[in-house]
Amino acid sequence: MRWDDFRGSDNVEDRRGEGGGGGGMGFPGGGAGGLGIGAIVVLMIIGWVTGINPAILIGGAEQMTRGGGGGSQREEQADPETQQRRRTAPTDESGRFAAKILGNTEDVWSTVLPNQTGKQYTPTTMVLYSGGTRSGCGSAQAAMGPFYCPLDKKVYLDTGFFKEMASKFGVKGDFAYAYVIAHEVGHHVQDVLGILGKVQARQQAASNKAEANGLSVRIELMADCLAGVWAKNSNDKYNALEPGDIEEAMNAASAIGDDKLQKQSQGYAVPDSFTHGSSAQRMRWFMTGYKSGQTKSCDTFRTANN
Image (tube, rainbow, N blue to C red):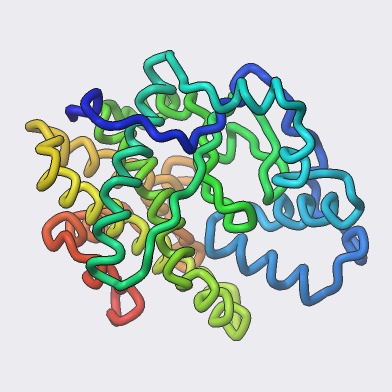
């Protein structure tokens, strides 16, 4: 992928080297630090939709209600020197890569989204960290992998995840890594379009966890499709893709399918417990977006089967 020609985004917070991340990962009991049961239910639904452990979301909200300064509230209290350092453009290769892919998603979606949906695109911020940090959704840990936090509208990425993709899943290549970033930005696009809120309402009305998981799968597959839409429009405008890039994305989508991950960890797959979709589903929906280049092709909720 010809990513070095992309514009680097200014919406990057580089917290690598700061350490931290905090504890409080356990599931709070009782009233969760003053949170009402309604708030807890909403946070659990957000967790199902985004793939974030609900305990982390509730822990972060608990700290916010106590005035403890989790997430964005804590970041507002960072001293000016720290804020300036975080906003300094990364100079290492992995940091530059992440900033340039994010910048390209901004350039693509700022045109594609209003043209295709009539909705203006408001960019997300990407937080680069190492080991652990704070998010608006509570503690962010490297083991969680990249994620989008709808409470502060930021994407969180430990850049060591790229090495983990290669060592643990055998997935290599810059476009495979770009697909991961584009998938998380896809969740932000869903947020901008108001889709996440609608899915939360549907999950709240779900009769069982399997039904709620099914809705989570659809939202994740939509993010895969939106990553494909980005790739298609980026290539059309910037001629960014090189031979083998799409295969890299397919390898990544296949490697992180729920069925493959479950079989690796426990020897068998339980479809009712899927939250992101099977390998075949993830590959198919990325290609759906890539072939069409149209946001409307990513409506995973209008199909009987994904």
